[in-house]
Length: 115
Length: 113
Image 1 (cartoon, rainbow over the protein chains, first blue to last red):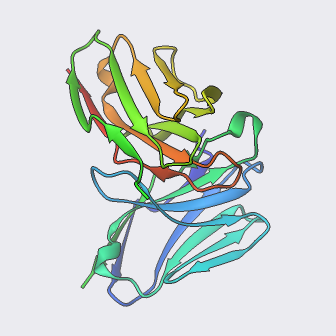
Image 2: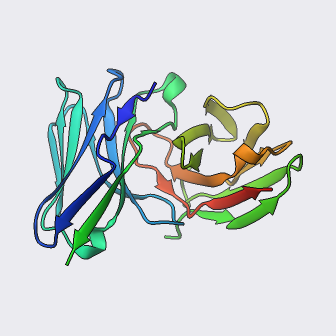
């Protein structure tokens, strides 16, 4: 049972335009969400996070939106740059107990930004 | 501040052998989590250690084990290796408090022949 889903395996965008990556979750206990970027043969790099008490968080070109009622979050990258081309993972966590130190990841979306 | 380091970066073993992977967290971080990444299953949580104690464990067989030392460095061990254990093993560190981002190391690529 996949609790975090990224339904788009890939996304292609022109440089300078907006990239929108989507993520859905099913576990209502999740209350903290993160986005990671990953290049081949490297570990994931943290990009941005959001807790369930917020619906938006911005950091430079990156904005994450959370819709709790729809159990949906999205990452917006504006403007997109060729260096943003990578695999993007959505991850979720819950509080304490059996959730200590555990992130549940989506399957990833390959973003390609064309010059 | 130095990032998370993992050794070795690459490893080739044969079925039936055992392997030990090492992870040094960011200075001051007391929590270390381990993940397995495979093409079919994606990133899967193995276990988490905090102050030398395993606080959480994922759904992996007992062949997968770990430990954490007093300096927060962690090791994971896989015994009786199977072909399906070929994967990228990632370690991540965080302060240990709730709602902290995890910072990942570069991973160890394990190939089982």
